[in-house]
Image (cartoon, rainbow, N blue to C red):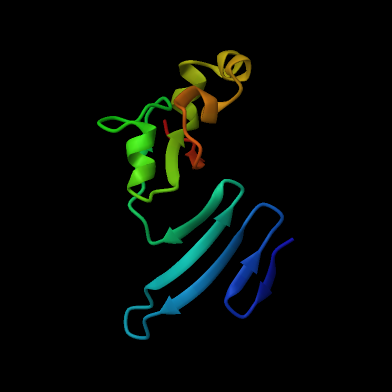
Length: 107
């Protein structure tokens, strides 16, 4: 169930709060509160293909202030596969990332 209070939208999994809105462009600054910490939006969001960042380590990414990484579930399903992910303990452990992970289906 989605609950709204003026500029705050809540569900069991997340809270989205609009902090500021441009009256001309309708652009928004907001905070997305997720299980692994809050994310200030808008954000440059890196993509970890097959749960692997390219060009940065997870610690280097965290030092930039980024707390959100995109994984592609289609690629993860192909390699390493669901069974391996479960044995490892999930995508966070596989990639050594303590921040939030957003997934898409890709393909």
